[in-house]
Amino acid sequence: MDNQKNREIRLKSRPVGLPTSDNFELVETTVPTPGAGQVLVRNSYISVDPYMRGRMVDRKSYVPPFQIGETLQGHAVGQVVASNSPAAKVGDFVQSMNGWREWYVADGAQVQKFEPAAPIQSYLGALGMPGMTAYAGLLRIGALKDGERVFVSAASGAVGSVVCQIAKAKGCYVVGSVGSDEKAAYLKSLGVDATINYRTAGDLTAAVAAAFPEGIDVYFENVGGAHLEAAINNMRVGGRIPLCGMIDMYNATELPPGPRNLAMAIGLGLTLRGFVVSSHYDMLADFHRDMAKWAKEGKMKWRETVVDGVEHAPEAFIGLFKGDNVGKMVVRVGPDKAV
Ligand code: NDP
Image (cartoon, rainbow, N blue to C red; front, side, top):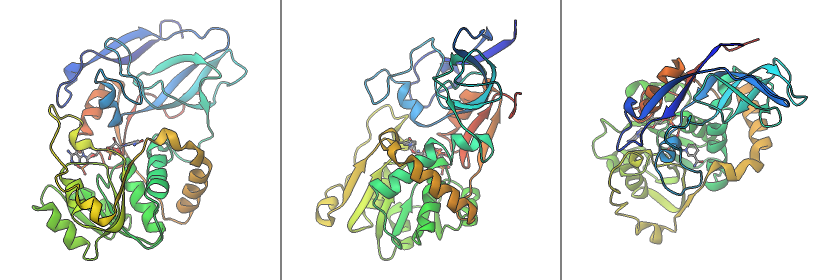
């Protein structure tokens, strides 16, 4: 691998508002040589995720902030191409947090081996962290019961599209909110009962009311803002709202007001409960078992929006906030099979 070039993306400056390509820097380095106990990995796909926007802010949170001048991190899948470690051999597929780069060296014990039962990029989406978020968020935090009425925002995305299908597999009535008619058509193809295009719907509370004449049992919150208010206005007594994400405010330069109608949660006895997926990995075996079963029964499908080239990772990331993706947004940074 002597003189083989590696390309990676570093944080150049902290974004204010919607990130721009100027906040990122493409840096060319030489592929490192693995030392004793180490492996060299060629990444195939890297993940860009909305939560990374929070890590670009210099503040205390559940994960430390990215540092300016350092290579960004995130989920990645790839293959071991050289090994000095008994823990992983050449050809092993591995997952890691060493994303935003083409190649990396790591301790053999630090990378997580897996045997792909589906195209490897699936492990960044439906079969990976976003799928697990949907599973834990809906079933544990949302305490979903069969046959309930479920509203999902950012419904055609990585998390949302899995939420919708788990709810359908549980015999629920499911309505998804999306930002385009193309995404609405995609959700219909997954068996979702109805969709709301929030960009064209006008009064969101009225649109949600029309879709839920009997109200909502579980609102899976991915967006916040007007979506949360519209959902609260339409919740049934005892309804649950798993607070998964609020992408509508990730680029806000001032804290938005509201939800103005939160007091309704008192009379309706609502449960609004936040969660971070990393606290729920005790459900991983159940998640894998159920996803395999649903996929086999044709009840769980997924897709990715693939952007090519690590140099385009910043655009792919920014695209999450513009709705550029259907399903999981991933960046292809190398061949599917390197050896
Ligand atoms: P998605 O694949 O859903 O991509 C983001 C989508 O959000 C876009 O495609 C867009 O779709 C929608 N969106 C972007 N901006 C807005 C806006 N202002 N208003 C409404 N919709 C918007 O991303 P993920 O599935 O990875 O993440 C979904 C949510 O889940 C995020 O809030 C994320 O932070 C959260 N999350 C939380 C985790 C946890 O542990 N709590 C773990 C993983 C994700 P459209 O065109 O439909 O608007």
